[in-house]
Image (cartoon, rainbow, N blue to C red; front, top):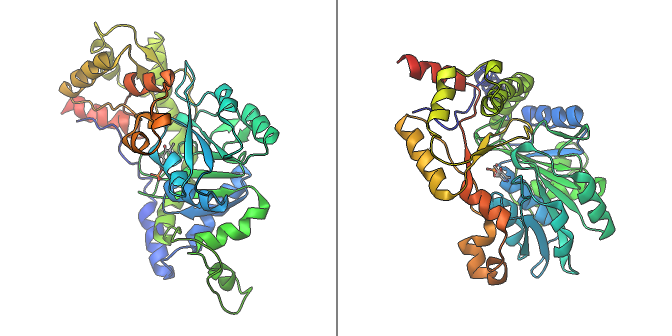
Length: 385
Ligand SMILES: *Cc1c(COP(=O)(O)O)cnc(C)c1O
């Protein structure tokens, strides 16, 4: 089978893992953690960065930092990963769901304001496929209602809005280094704290509710329990793995761009522009589409995180998945709209009852094609075997 994703290895991971082992500090906040955090702070102009065990954990840190309480409301797109909403639901917040745009799965910024009430405590912007939300519109709203803007930038590493890096706009931003993302360490994440007043408390929450990090810096003589927190730190072993990826970020992005550009060129009829994907593979993808109606394809590249096709309905999409599987190609759909989830049905029936037509359409009709660094080689291997 040609998989949907194959985690990329740069080749430097083993060296850095050995180095981390030799350094002898394997828990969090060690040598490689510092290197990774500085990389992001310097490269993208982020505020203070904290490596976490996942983006889910980074979002849970954000909910703690904002003191989200039962009865509060948080505005989140419906077409996103569970964690975007779950992190705030864990603290007792009610989730208000924003629909997707008509022509893109990302949240419709124009539909945020109608959801704002006295109970609203935060707006969470999700940069779907690493394609930026309109941060000007969202920032204006956040300022108008004095609400914190949070970025779920899980998919959005090395992506920009008006020349400024995603993750540098919100008071807080969360990234993912799960193996399905552009750069990864198996499981991992990062919280970016762009609001200086929140940094000190973020560090305590990160360190299990203690001021142990200040002790390590020699600022205090003993540490203690200061606040709520949890075990959010990434092990330095995983940070070592991640650093190997970060050093090759430009190469990883260039390869993903070449693959993305090939898909885009092929489906828009510019078949003389193909660079890295074998033509026979692209021809096969196209042949399998015969008789499946009008199919749209993704037009905004973002950071080349994914490439999707959009079918007229769920049955046509399912037929295409089956046809590709018969040819040994794995393609997968994406999020089930969260406002239609079992959790929301049981806990917020009023949100479950809402009809968010665009999000529901992308849940039913969107299909992602394989996109990973080694895809051209994997395809060639399959053709010749
Ligand atoms: C991947 C993803 C997450 C979760 O990331 P983890 O690191 O697996 O916790 C959250 N939100 C979005 C939009 C994602 O794509």
